[in-house]
Image (cartoon, rainbow, N blue to C red; front, side, top):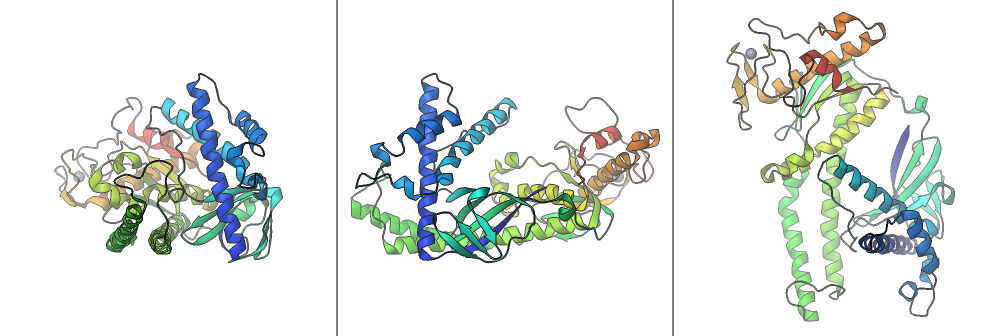
Length: 450
Ligand SMILES: [Zn+2]
């Protein structure tokens, strides 16, 4: 299993300077490659990353744009991996873009990277560096201290060095043997997890887990610090005699105060990110550790982010990251993750009798079922419906080797709605005309076992 460990580095000022230059080189090469790609594509060619890299290698020591003021090729001072990897990254970005487009999903082509606006990072191939205890030895800069030793044994596949606010990190990708990655479970419950805005996660047991919502708390300070920074930028523009938008290829003078201001702002952003990361890690670890099967909604996150009212609240919780972490941690704990179809009306079904409340709107936190009279908390009810999906998927999976007809027809406990009255099968909305509700339940899980 591939696992990455991100470790904070304590570089010397010289090493720090090299990191900044290497990241700048990676950015500049990316921009060169992208511009060249666009130029060739516009001319009717079929650009590819390998050919572009060869083309770059031919010019990088001779083209005047890549020489310093003494006519020397400065790129020699930067390790090769930093300026070779952007080509592979660019190829991947284009492939992803075309795949998304083919699938009819919203797609964005790769864009140019702007200094100060993009992530500062560069790549290191596995044979170019080594980790020794809590130090790392990197090409061109030598040994440096790490805040902790590499956590995983196994074959190192590569690393990237990146900056977050004023700190540098090395993220090491390791191919870890499966018997090492496997983790014990502390419980074998089956849980539905409803992700939401008011409570980040509602478990089918009734527990509501509230996210720290760091962005909301920090928003005021964020506004103040951004304002301070933009005032400094305005001052710099006035000094350079620029009015309105800054023209291309010009840079207003950077003052010490402006650098300080942007660093304070970056530090606040980094703090928000780490509070969020900490919460999500703890939540997903707990959910995977305590359950043998977990069902979550396969939320249409980008669609929800398009909703302006919800977007800040949603990105503050980090739904997509929750889902990503659940999937890889489930593999380590041997937990089954069931992704309910995004059209599955988990909120609108009565978890008691299965009747559907089509009139339910987003604002209603509590509702009463018209069919059986049960009173539901919106989120708990949704989590209970998801739990039923998880139970069904688990039953289908354990019964799979003997192909028991009982399991496939969905008579597993918990899957059949309890209580009297009409039994409405659990149906997905559009696009699934065939099969009973139970078969759909089984169709929408992805088994994740080590
Ligand atoms: Zn009901």
